[in-house]
Length: 447
Image (cartoon, rainbow, N blue to C red; front, side, top):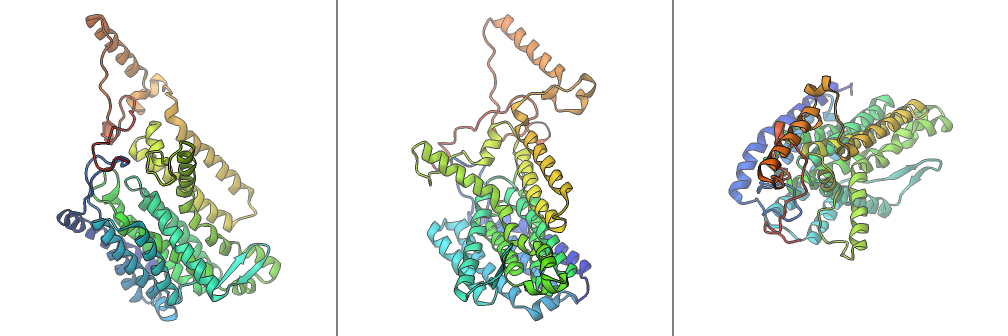
């Protein structure tokens, strides 16, 4: 097969277009079907929003696989491997369960069982881990049961990690899109950089997954017009896990050693193969940290670890003063830093500049994260370039107005609270401080 750059681009564009065009009709269908659950106490959105966005994403997945099957340089993936069929079978099952959950709220144990069954369907069709490349140890062959159990565990963990991070508009789709873009880069490099065609299915899966997320994001960015629901979050989690399993457990490490020209050189050359074991954790890293912090926080407060609250990372970003969109962008930044940092390190692991760049960007991310804790004032010559809350003139005018009101009435002026989530200038609360979350105890669940 040649280098199918244009074929990948065409597959990506078709997936994006089909997902984007289907999302509008799916939204109308979700409203007509009543797939609009009540707002719970821990939710961030203020109005009931339809779910079932996973229907459009599944349509994009099918369209991407169909187009790739009819392209000259990509149809070999379907002829030489059964992995695309395995992916479609598992995706169809988990998608169907997700659709039912978006409408009828299926029990969590039933969903967990469905996730394990979906992983088992893919294992039965050959999409499983056969061996593990372990640094400083070498290739460890797995028995059939070991490979199957590890495959199921990876699928279930990835699905739930993506589902867990789906807490703000556009957050899960954007983070998975970033992870799939990084995944595509190193999968493509293994395929053509090392001449290993066994990496072709994972490269195709990553391109299609990127298209699914890009096509859905315009409808899901704040304020979201539709949510992907479990039908979408579990679907993209399964596709991401399938790509990781394909490139980790199917690529023969001996081929890498032969290409590198020796066992010692292969240790360095096989670093890109070790990365698939780590890169799925880039999407799990943030939600797993959130999960651990939630368990510690609830246990410390004498609550059940499974009790719902508004203490998750995205809630805290909103509470310290970030707008909805800025909180999402900050989490995008950290996801991209981890994912593309891992890819860059796999390409030039001996370069110290990559490590220094990652450290510098991490420092920038921390500054952006803590910026609302401070109220910097821009110089007067730059006031026209910054939001009003950073201007000397705005603060002086506010103080003068308060003084005038106090002199007139002799009482402290009443401040009108800013409701979290209501857009101000340019879609964000650009004027005045941001308040805490409104009381939602009367809307939906009392948790």
